Length: 136
Image 1 (cartoon, rainbow, N blue to C red):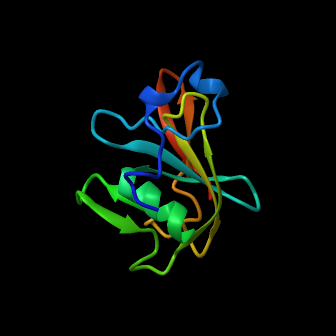
Image 2 (cartoon, helix red, strand yellow):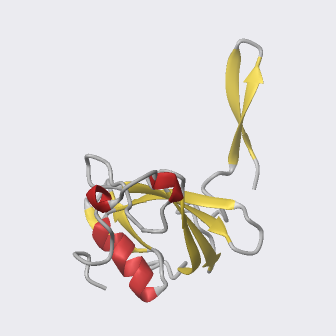
């Protein structure tokens, strides 16, 4: 799948974007689209990352999750160094096509902290302040 032909141009969509069956992802001004990875078995949110066109095209082609690292400014395949890969079961797009959900089978922890999910702290009100409560 070539990134030049993989996605429909938003300019070619007539009518409501919410009702089309054409895939026309709305990448932000930075060329990225947020992608939330959820566990296929439990539905639990595992992580939030970003994709550029190439990462999305590679994910669709290979069935493995590819992302764009904003901190390293490079493309990366999830688990390339850790072995904690994500096999993509399905990809969903939100109503206006500016966010993605990757439903994945996660090998090992999803978070670089070695936790199953990057969302392991809950925010709680503590008097006039807020605190983080750890939950694994």
